[in-house]
Length: 432
Image (spheres, one colour):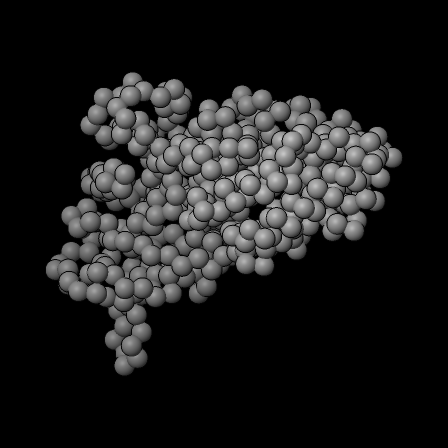
């Protein structure tokens, strides 16, 4: 459905600058295809039918995305009071939420208890004491150590009880009169090693048996998140088979996918605000400066060393600022963010098919995960981003969908302004 996304981008850009120079003309923006989220959900149900997804809100907390996922029937993985509030505000049943942070503040536990959120996680003795005091009726999941050395981010460095400590943790929970009903693990962000999952599942089975010996009925297994979109069809059925093999009956499975749902649904469009052409003897790439960088939507370049390949928005829809003739043929560029920090480099080096000029716009696909969620206001640059919404499923099938009628006009992650919904404002088609 890229032509639809391109159409929305071109329509927005063609409307810029009509009333003189404005701040909005110089701001990056997203196009979000909610239809892609629906397709990802179908893929999940088709390939991991036994595992119920609890969307990781930390990945992208766009209210329209959360609303759609709620209507699709997912649960929600929350890690803070604010994330709990965001989901509860949509009218989601608290039983569909897991407070999946092993180390919580007293106030957040009180909030969860009062809101009726039953599930939370733990991995240490002190956390059990805190839970006993502030949320004693919680349903607990013991988070165990799990690791994939090939993962982009190894979360085991921070969370997860080693298997040689789980018996003592379960004993302490029993002494405190707490209810342990689940086991959880997370092998790491971007994990792809099936052996790491199998090992964690087998260790979870040990914990289930330990719990049984102490009188606990542990019947929930949370296998965490970090699922790769690129190999999902190949990986998921093998994971499904491993779960059924180790737990043929009596176990409910859940997971905490985030980027799996959000990443491919969002496209980011950035403006080239300046350019430095290299005139020295060294063959260095020319430098492009754009209106978003690693302190904004591109934090993954720093954290995960992500390599990006933006494309130039088709000719005729760029600003007139560049002016003049555009030289054809490949040009090599590095791309930099707007801040004064020299580490604010988005692309180290890449070839473009033609010259890129000041006032042009660059399109970055697959930008829905950990972009706005990790954005800062360093150097005073705003962290909010406008979002234009599209539902390619609705357009592609020419029929109404309940969730479309409930998508509110909301075009900013961090400020609630009544901008028109991109779909109904820009596309020449009949909508409900």
